Each structure stands twice: as C-alpha cells, then as structure tokens.
Image (cartoon, rainbow, N blue to C red; front, side, top):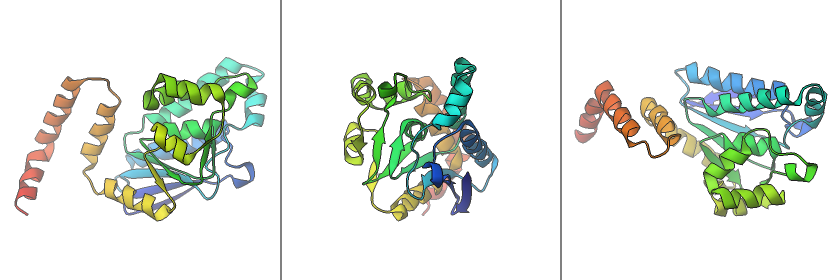
Length: 236
C-alpha cells in the first residue's frame, strides 16, 4: 500500500491505495509507521515526504473500523493512537504534501508531520462530529497545538470542508503550491542541513518553554563538531 523512492537524501513515501482513496486501515498505518521508523535507521535518508498521486487520503477505513471496533472499541482506539504516535515520534523531519481529499484520519496523518505543504486545490475536513464520534488519531490535541483551541474548535465542531487557502490562513498549512517540484526543492533544502541539528530541532520544538533543553542541545552539538563546522563556514 506504499511505494518508496529515495532521491537526494529524501525518501518519497507514496500512499498507494487509489481504489479506496487511500483510506487508512490499521494495516496501512502500520506500513507507514514501519517505513518511517526504517527511514530513521537509514543513514542515506535525512527527510521523508508523504504524498499521493491524487487524493492524499479520504480518512480512516470505515469497514476496517466497524469490523474491529464492534468487538472492542477501546482496543481499536488505543491501537490507532499508538500508530499515529509512532509516526509523530520519528526522529527525522517529515513533510506531508497534501493533494486532493485530506479528510478525517488522512488529515490527522498530515498533522503528525513537521511541515504541511498543500496543493492549492486540496480540501480538508474533520467530519467526525457528523457521525456522532470524535477523531481517533489525535486531531483534537495536534490541531489545537497548531492553531489554538478556538480555531481548532471551529474546524472540529463544524465538520465542514475547508479549501487549502483557508487552512493556510488558519496556520495548518505552511505553504501552498501547484507543483510537486516545489515540494522537492524544499525537502532537498532541508536535507542539505546537518542531520544532528535537524533531529535536535524536532526534539526542542515538541517542548514548551524549555530553554534549559535548548541550552543542552546547543552544548551537545557544539561539542559534537559544531565549532569545527562554524570555523569551516567562516573560512569560505
């Protein structure tokens, strides 16, 4: 259900279940998490990009959810949350290139990434309220962290479909584009930077007002070779 291509230190992970509009079953999420964790161990890879040929994802696989959730809904909820959390905890930068439909669990998959770049024609929704449920992949917490409680409340409680420009104005998306080439340019730019610094930045960005942690990471990287890299830069 996924395809992998590595180019210029960037791993392109294509969601490839077009007949289901990339509906995310538990096994599909498992594959994504496994691949991203494998990328963390691959020294060639410095950045990963999640993308699709057309629709990024229509959301969770409802048939999969019904078949598993009827027996033990709490067990299913915990399993899904754990998979999203595994993706959120990968060490290297993760970009989502959002195209077409980005609904429900697909929107939540985008939210676990560090950067969301969207095609101008992409549409976004968290429609769970319409079905009498809440999101199961962390949207209530991650969307709130990105855009604040009131904006997140508006997106979640209305359940409406938003276009890419609306999501950009809210701060969900970091960049709008019409071209995958522009996504590649950004990914390669990030990959050109020091991997230790990128990993440290991910650690620090997940903390809240922890200036001591920043000082510790700074000192660690200086000791690890930061001084030599600065000296080398100054000699250019």
